[in-house]
Amino acid sequence: MAALLAISGDLSVARAAGPAAGPTPPPRPVEIDKNSALILIRTTLIAVQQANQTGNYSVVHALSAPSFQAGNSAERLSQIFAKLRAAKFDLSGTLVLEPQFTVLPELYSNGVMRMAGFFPSVPLQVYFDLQFEPVGGQWRVAAISIDIAGSTPAAPTPNPALASSYPAPAASASPSPSATPSPPAAKPESKQSPSVEVDIKPKPKPTPTPRRKL
Image 1: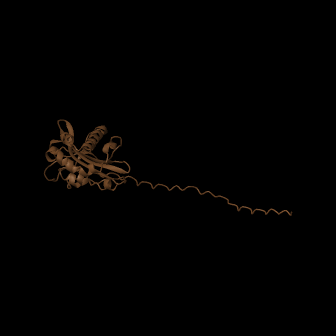
Image 2: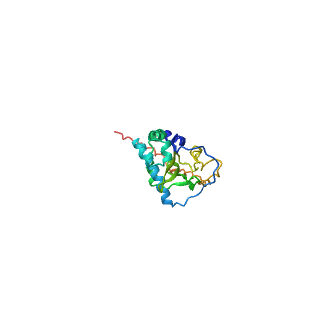
Image 3: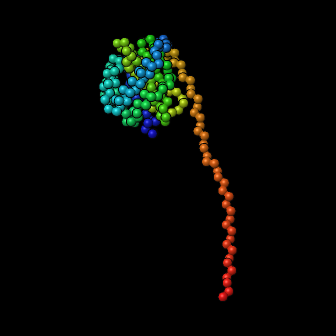
């Protein structure tokens, strides 16, 4: 358990190579339906899951955007996700869970779409911060950030290391609206077994039997 909780998002970040970020206009909402967004998230996480299982990241590399491929070979992806792979955490549960968005799909002036959030699994949650670029009429991965942490109601903050690779999420740009924090989890009530009173009465002393005279 400790090994899983120690996974750092910085060690599980793969992003496209690019120039340093500069001041850019704030992002705007993307016109993308929920199912399409879920497909992009889940297919990306499952691709990483299968790569972690097999140790072969060539499919993740092939499905990504050219800018991502230029900075991340299959061998480098294997190094980036080494700690997540060693923890043997199964990401396939994201196929049946509904993600909670901390950053709704938004589009930046350079054409990059970003979305972030987490899957509310127990006892550990899967946090994601993903970016996509349009290539040939399809959205293809431009950045992947995956983190595993305890199931606390606090939402993850945007990853500055991930954001700095693109002009879009630059620190000087308007910050993304933060997600409304979930209410604190209710403390489980301690259930005590009802006490049972037992009336214990002293046993009467046996009456001695008189001896017969012979």
